[in-house]
Image: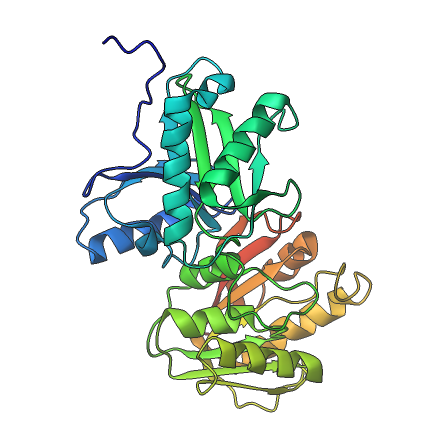
Length: 363
């Protein structure tokens, strides 16, 4: 019998050993950092050279392994399975054969997920049309879920590929991977986990690092450094007792509580010896959710001076801020800090400056 219906260009349920078509969402401005981590994972697992198609906000690739392996990546916002279908329009996906194929694949993804899903949410142009609603309801039934257009955590996207095919993308975790499970306490203006992990990677962590988290807040930068590699010390301070308690709570939830030591102190007047640290991590007030644009100039100037005092010659400082002009002005010809790397990165509706500074060897 001649098959007259549309045929998928990639089977949603690959046979054992067949690479998985996936898309890894990344923060715009950090795709190169995420690609480096992905390639390290491939080498470590013996997958050979992994070469993704790099976009500003995503890495697309065929992964020769499991989704669980990709869930170990720390700089990725989320992982989505991707299936492509050579059909002229989304309505064709409602055909019985294709719909059963897609539904079976989504049901398998839900069964294998690291945490339970509660409802399905479709993200697509015209998602309120009859065709899109029928498509969402059919997939939800296959997965044993309801459709919740606003709060659904099984996120399904439908889009047209540059090749003209239609792609179905399904996020493999109920929450983005950038939302860390260890975050049991939060503070205003905190960084997300994937952004912090990428910032830490740019500083090239070493097992001999004596690490200092200044203005720790909820502890994201310090905890991500604790989780990526061993360190000689992992100390931190904040002027707010609630921030100190929050960091300690999150560190304990991350399994790093015995290594992370945090206390209340003013970062501009530290009771710490000179040259005590090799790596300093700081996310100072941006002047919106935390701090004030009026007081930040004096705060930033004093902070950089004092952190320069407690930094060993050649130490690295990771600095994240939305006070871009102020920071650039202060770092121009700074007596203690040299800019080794700087870039703008999207984060939570902002485009902060992410810097890696080097401590001058002059005292």
